[in-house]
Image (cartoon, rainbow, N blue to C red; front, side, top):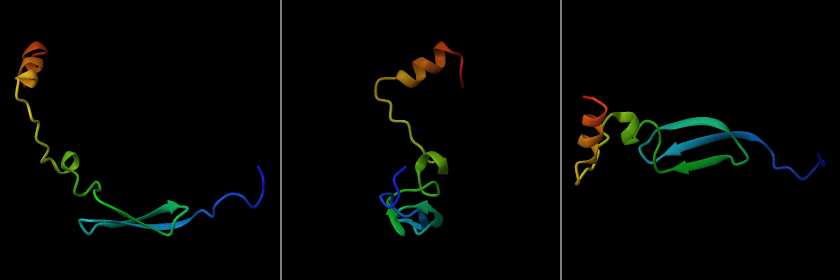
Length: 66
């Protein structure tokens, strides 16, 4: 690897729009994001499945799922 061409790898403070913040490593000092694991619907359990044509029910019936 060539010396002097790679960005510096530093500790990064990540801040979400919901107010959550955490630290990781990156080549930037600070990153602002719109959604994180605290406010994302998949992780919070508030995920809604939009099904206008009955595909979900058909799938559940086919594989005997609740």
